[in-house]
Amino acid sequence: MKGKALLECKHFAAEWLRAFEIKRAGGNIQRLDELADFNDDEVLRRGLWMISIVGGPVVYLLLPFVLSILQTFIWAQLTIVLWTLLKIAMGLIFATFALAVYFTFLQDRGSIG
Image (cartoon, rainbow, N blue to C red; front, side, top):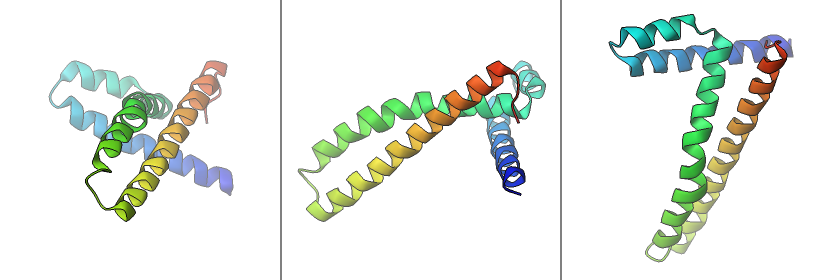
């Protein structure tokens, strides 16, 4: 039962990422043809890597820098809440990176899903 739920969640995430990529491709026929050739596992892996690569520097470098500057101007209790939210975002980005690495190594062995 758990395996089926995980596969459904993985399929849902892959479909969402595919829809996002199709929307982002716009009218580019070549890009749409590339997306049609990808299976769900490739779409999911590429999406996870993209989120990790873009989100990592933003969440681990840019946002702490901005928040450290803003904390001199905003209310102390709000600063605590914002730092907590930032730490949660850091955890989510790290989990996304870990999943991207996992799916990449799983794909290299040739046995995804």
